[in-house]
Image (cartoon, rainbow over all chains, first blue to last red):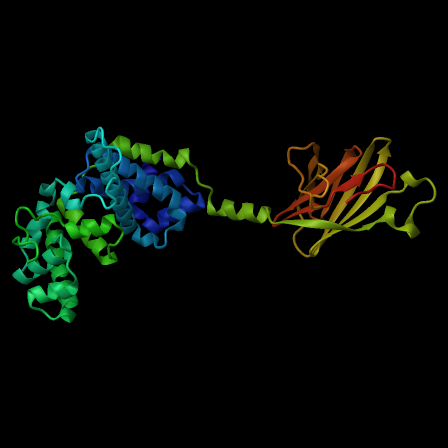
Length: 197
Length: 217
């Protein structure tokens, strides 16, 4: 079985592995090949949100169970990685909210009437592991000043400004943001690729 | 700059906006690719082997029904109800006048474009033999069984679905001429169920007795 999984992992596309699962052909080997391919990615998401390992494990199991149950309904099996990221992000956030509620419940002994906040904390209030994003931040810093600034506004700034506001602050025409963004992302992805090597 | 911080200063290394959008399901597809590239660039955390083993067990703990099996099940459950269109015991001109029970009873059932011809012959006081043939345009091999019927409550719809756990006879094979034979049948109320390759046919309830006069629907 392990040999089979290794072969599938190396040779089969996500779409092919999903088809095997749906058709009942070598289901365990195909499922294991998908897990081997994506477990680290899934598991990293809750950790990058600052969750502890026990919570990260819960999120990971939740993502895997969701995939197992919903694999037949995936709209685009070629985008499985993106789908997994989305599910992992949602479940991580849910875990953060649960952790937050637990903490509040433990700290508020008498005041049981106060409702819990609906919106919850912002990610920058709960995510403590900034150091784990330093390599990416360094890659952004390696970009040109203009790209660095634009990437900051687009992906980092908690103010989450609109394109219009970003354009105004950067002294650019709003219509030009899209094309500049595309060029900056290209540079950034190259920097990120270099980091992986 | 809105946050009054220099871009990517030491307090601002978190891709907050990306994480916020991901957490709330608002992230764009190409930003998902960027986020994945960022995660991989930072280096992915190693998923503990025991966690992966637990996820692996899902395939056995919650077995999936394969698509092919689901299609087969749906097809097999596409049951057609066969109505009685002829019964020799209810046709006055053909009703036996002598030695009634010695004459085989002829029945004809129809479900869509499939007809089932039945010949019921008493072999002893308490036993009968049913010889049938499935006639239709498609492939007719499969299997046939008689399932004891449970009388529906008064006022209930007259379409009777036999309960599979009831006593009955068969299955017996339906050969490539569409013929089948069930013997040693005791008198009673039955549903004839025929499973062909692509469809299931179930008859209305049939009263099979050694003498004429009380067939039922």
